[in-house]
Image 1 (tube, helix red, strand yellow):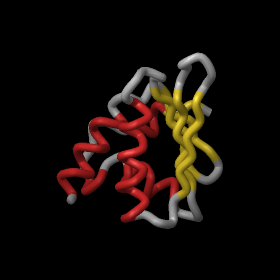
Image 2: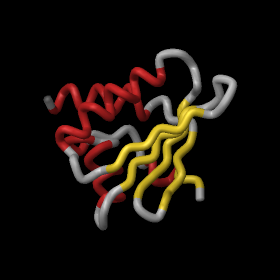
Image 3: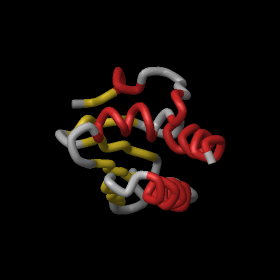
Image 4: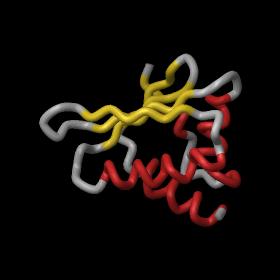
Length: 102
């Protein structure tokens, strides 16, 4: 299961165009290309099982524009999103917090 979460995190978050820090989580912006809705849905489905305290919301820009994923939760969720969701088992490709757009 940890290997699958690592694969999903790599597949999803390597495609992030930008990231915005929210008060209670993060918003990630992805391309509007075909394939992204299904990828994001698979990731949300997997994460809802292990992280029932998180809220996931998808937003689709008109005319095939960007797709935004908002992941929010209670106190401590922001740290979990970066350390547990984006980088399961301590896996990291770089500190994405540096790329947060405010």
